[in-house]
Image (cartoon, rainbow, N blue to C red; front, side, top):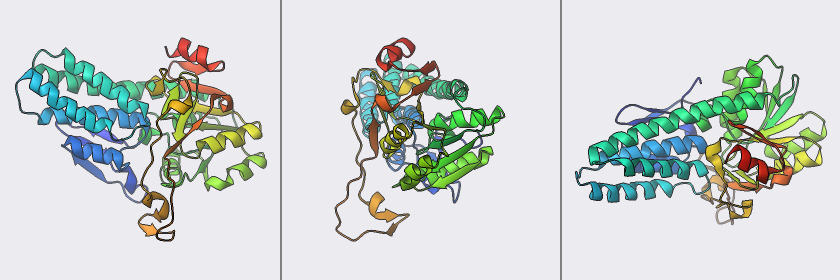
Length: 343
């Protein structure tokens, strides 16, 4: 991975501010969990797996700030830390997956010193597991990419979003490394342009040919017969195979179905929420109106206009050809196969 989105430095977390890309690479050293929580809210730290890893280190930062030596009092303060971090991004399952693991690690410690050591170790473990998971996922997914294929992707699901190889982009980059002559069409992904700012930047770094389009051009490009497959990431996958991803993903999935183009979702097991039966149960985050009315601080809409800004939409499993995980490729019937593969 050319650029790491975050790095643990013993007593602080160094993050790459993803809101500043691609114009400049700015790294921030964070020592306070509240600052980390704000960075997640502001998308300086973003992408479901990266959010999960960042959350784990955020809990660790909070634990290191707690001064009491009393185990009960410490755990009470630590719970407040975890609640703060959990309140940042409601849709990303990896956030809650990581916090649950950190809570379990804390409970295993006999005293405060042991708890802090356990939290540091668990955060590092979550980080390493995500890196390994995306590497395996990419290897499985690359088998679906044919030589000469043009692939469309939406939002950003590369190393920046995963701390590892990448999910959707990991599959693409792996196929490229295998020598397959592939091309990518990346949607800009409004309103915050993760596609134009981040996906194109990562693919260009990896040497993968990429063409940028606006979101509204997806149907046109598919109709021209230029797209052989679509692959995206996910922030949450239900037990039925419904998936939540960046707003606009549902539109791309419907268009792909209409044009007979396979639509793939790439996500590690940590992103699955099998307790949810359908996508209707996935909590959808709504974000600031300014993200729609402004571009990089410049207003593009009239003052006072009403704005709707859901950060995610849900793609029903009927539009999905396969879900790629580090445990293998899951195909319909999803409910049975998710239970078999992911557990």
